[in-house]
Structure formats: C-alpha cells, structure tokens
Amino acid sequence: MNRYVVTGGAGFIGSALVRALLAEGRRVHVIDNLSTGKLDNLEDVADEITVHEYDLRDYGRIAPVIAGAYRVFHLGALPSVPKSIADPVPSHDTNINGTFNVLRAAVEGKVARVVYAASSSAYGDTEVLPKTESMTPRPKSPYALQKLVGEYYATIFSSCYGLETVSLRFFNVFGPRQDPTSVYSGVLSIFMRCVLERRSPTIYGDGEQSRDFTYVEDVAALLLKASHARGVSGKVYNAGNGNRITLNQAWQLLQQIEGVEIPALYGPPREGDVRDSQADTTAAVRDLGHSPRFTFEQGLRLTLDWYRADLARRKQAGQLEAFSRG
Ligand code: UD1
Image (tube, rainbow, N blue to C red; front, side, top):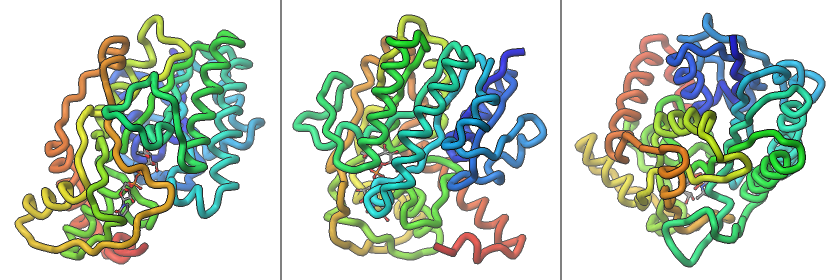
C-alpha cells in the first residue's frame, strides 16, 4: 500500500493533514523532532500511524523513511518571524538545510511528489492587495527568506531532477491544537487563550495590520488536492482564504462571541512584521480546485469551542498550570 510521509506531522497543521489522510484510508508516517510539535496532537490516531522522532537536519535518519514513499508533505519547520530574527541559526538550519534534505531524500528515494509548506511571509509588503503568485517576493525576515529559499529549491528540484513538487504559501493558518503558550505563538491562539481567561492580549502596533486567517481544515484539504493535481509540478500557489481581517476586528469578534468587554493593550510594532496580507486564490482555485469551506467567523467559533473544551479537560486533569504557562 502507498505510504504517505508528513514531516512536521505532530504540529497543529501537520496533525490535521494526518487526520485528513487517514480519513482517505492512507498509510501515514510522520517525521517530527517534537521541537514545536506534540505527540498529544496525534493522541487519538496514535494506533493508526507510525511516528519517527527524527530531526530534518539528520539526513541519514530521515532518508530511509522518505525513500519509496508515494507522496511527501513537507511541513516540518521552525516557525515564527520574531523567533527567526532573535535566533536565526536554528531556523536557518531547519528551514533551509532540512528542506534540502527532504528534497534530496525524495529524489534519491524515487518519491513521485513533494508538497511543500511555503509561507505568505515571502511576499513582504506589497503595494497591491490581494497578493498574487506573480509578484516579486520581498521577504522581511530570516523566516520569510528561508521559506522562500525552500520554494526555490522545490522548483529547482522539479526542473533539474524531475521530482514533482508543489509549493503552497500558507496564509496565517489557525485552528484547534495550535499551541497558545509561547510569545511566538500564532496571534489567534493567543487571543483565544486571553478571551477564555478574561485577560487583555497585547497587540503589537495599532492593530490595524491585517491577515488572511485561514482555517486549518481548508489548508489540509488543499494539501491533499495539491498532492494529486495534474500539470502543476514546480509551481507555487497561495493557500489562503482570500479575505483579510485586522487584529482589532479579530479581537472585537472574539469579545462579542464570548459576551465580554476586555480592552486590548497596545505595544510597539514587531520587527519584521508585514502590514497587510491577503491571498489572491484565483490560481489555486483554477489549478488545484481550492474551495475553502470555512469563513473566518466559522473557523474562529470552531477553534474557540476546541480551546474551551481543552481548558475544561485540563482543569479536570489538574493540568491548568500547563495551559497558563508561557
Ligand atoms: C507569519 C506568516 C505566516 C506564517 C507564520 C509562521 C505573514 C503575513 N504571515 O505570520 O504565513 O505561517 O509567520 O510563524 O508574514 N501579534 C500581536 N500580539 C501577539 C502576537 C502577534 O499583536 O501576541 C501580531 C503580530 O505582530 C502580527 C500579527 O499579530 O502583526 C500576526 O502575528 P503571528 O500570528 O505571529 O503571524 P505572522 O508573523 O503574521
């Protein structure tokens, strides 16, 4: 039976993809060093998958897992724009050298296709919105550049070595299981934790920066589509919802849903931050059959319900501190 490999499969996006693959009856192997991913994210499917706790920088270990796979989804990375500015060496090693290792192992192991998780951060600040794939990238941080290099490598591996690759530029993905406990966590996970704990979040800048927040299940569905679409090798596509929401709007909506009034605190803008982000989804719709199912509000409500249930579960298990740490 065909084997599907998901690097970063213990992360919140990776684990959603693992579930989507299992729902299609696929055999799934996960490569994850658990630096940001967690086995908890795969708890309910642990018996159905094989997890390899390997680091992407360790070619000797990951190559045999990748060899002979039918499809590889390369989601493993060290995320976060500010983390890559504060400490660029680990993210450079993982995001560039790790990606090179995955592509090299795929060629040597005769994998038919690699789907790569690229990032909308590659665009930087553009004069025009929404952002289309033909725009010149203007990365503003080491993370954005690293993710762009991975894309270029994927395209080069397609043209030079005949490996089929498809890169999807993720646009601020959110949803259940996103870890809210670090200062580097995705902003919506932090907002949700704050609203449930009735605390003010800190917004960096004036809060009028905008993001195309994309629900994790829509991203998982697009990853599957990209893994079997025809005539797309070497190409890059936006994986966004197509809308944009400011941070002020997002915090306002969360307060409304919870029926509370908690003014946000405001701090200085974050270095390397992109001002506005919004995907033009035309190419992904046309070539991959992208069809996002969740509006921002639907995704937000589902995610908030998940955090609420998770909080209750932790309270019951006496682990509340674990949720509040960070
Ligand atoms: C960027 C990429 C995204 C990628 C992610 C990986 C862009 C447009 N997006 O996300 O595709 O997946 O990196 O890490 O570059 N913020 C606050 N308060 C907080 C935390 C964040 O105000 O407590 C603000 C940030 O300053 C930023 C926005 O929220 O303006 C979003 O931040 P974050 O969730 O970290 O994602 P990006 O850096 O936009």
